Length: 244
Image 1 (spheres, rainbow, N blue to C red):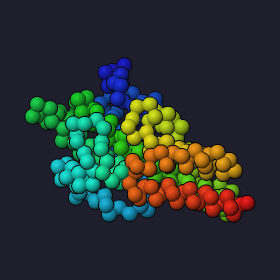
Image 2 (image 1 turned 120 degrees about the horizontal axis):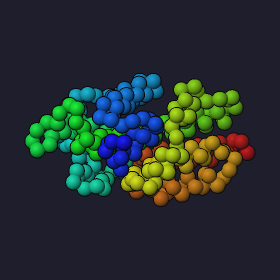
Image 3 (image 1 turned 90 degrees about the horizontal axis):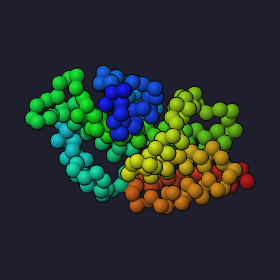
């Protein structure tokens, strides 16, 4: 077992790709694969790609200024302070910022050799975390929509792609890990409770659990993110009224 494998912060890559040996070359490969998957995900789900144009991410300093205009960021602090609250765009922007930092990472004023990434591993891990939070929230939202449509129109099954993404995403495992180690645990708690509510539409207790979670973390969310969750609560109530 290498030092890389034993590092405490190697959490999110093993969560995504279980059973791999995390050598330098393997981590580079997985990082490339994760970025490729993200691009395919955007294309397949037809998310508008305009806010994520490559020109915005050529310089980390430029990106940092852009993000700082929306959020109070201090790279020397562990806990990020929010001006407008967290949402999927924040997590995606932070992923780009951290990944670019990793690509141009300097130690003692000199660029790291291509084969040595151990000292930049914390940066890489942060990048993976932010991208994974983006994945998690978006997959949950799509899966949530498919569940609502399934119940509303008595469909036999969810769309194949959504079903695959949901099956491949270990919602409970991610929720458990995030709740133990990360300041963004509230994101996974919100979406985990959302999925649970819509997978059990006849159980009112899951609705109240999700509603209480939304109320609990509303101040940490952006206005758009709050609107999403309020809309989810209304949709559930509307569905319950329709079903009787």
